[in-house]
Length: 407
Image 1: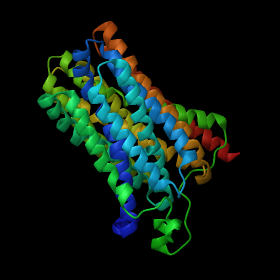
Image 2: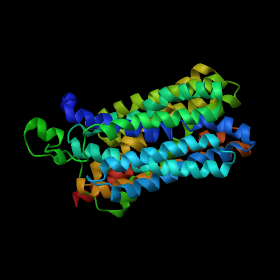
Image 3: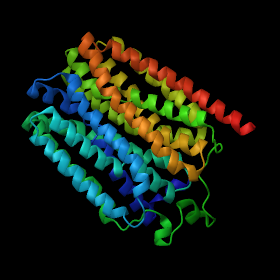
């Protein structure tokens, strides 16, 4: 397996650097946000949905920055851009510790989301695509899984900080960790493309042959295929917003400590689930992988609807944690399988924008459902329906792509 060669110096440096960027930009910015909802709402005396909007602004700015990053990033400004964005993101995160109103929370979350988005998923997956040309499902999952790994480690750690010194101190800690995670990308001698250092993508370096294009089923140019691909990834992203409400959901059932454990379990499942999902796509293809994962996620939601014990809630969290793999690794693979490498850098940021927007809009919507009904049952049923539609759209988009290829 080509991935066994990842220990070769410069390739490993690139891999570590991209893992750090994902752990910082997604793991901290997006996957720990749910910890702050309750303490902020209590101190500021506002509704849960209003605080949930902090992640909405962060997500939307993150998505917008992803669109722009594809135009701004080039080999000459690669490291400088990462350094500047790291400083801005850390400063904005630290600034959240001083906020006394929702408006300032919204503004600073937007700023840090934008800075994080410039060096987030679009940059990391593009660099990975330049440096690695084999086992792309596994390697993409390895990098993107770091968002869940960072969340799994930082959720209990930041919760401990919140318990000890409050949410303001936790934001300062998060800012410091974000800087540390980005340092490999800033300090290690890596480049945007292997050619900039006289190297070739990993497959070419190992086999001695010319770089091979990423595996794909074809180069679909149908607008319907592009729209369906974006829609299925966006709906999957909507589902992945659910875990951020686990702490509040468990609290509503009188199991606050279970809620913290659920976040840890879901993010461990996030990490391991991406590894498994990436390997599955390499062997089974994306369509079958989504159907298998979708079935498991739906089972998790159904169980959570009636879970009355900590054990069942943790079991549900483990299954629902798999949802992170589809809009992350799945989004990368659907773009690689359906579109040419040349079109990847154009289509991926656009779908990424839709995916992040859907995730951002999910937070206040699910929060409003709870505020209106005083129950999470309605939110869970909505997410279940969205998951089933996502599975159906996966089948449809590949059917359309295959039909177009056969013409």
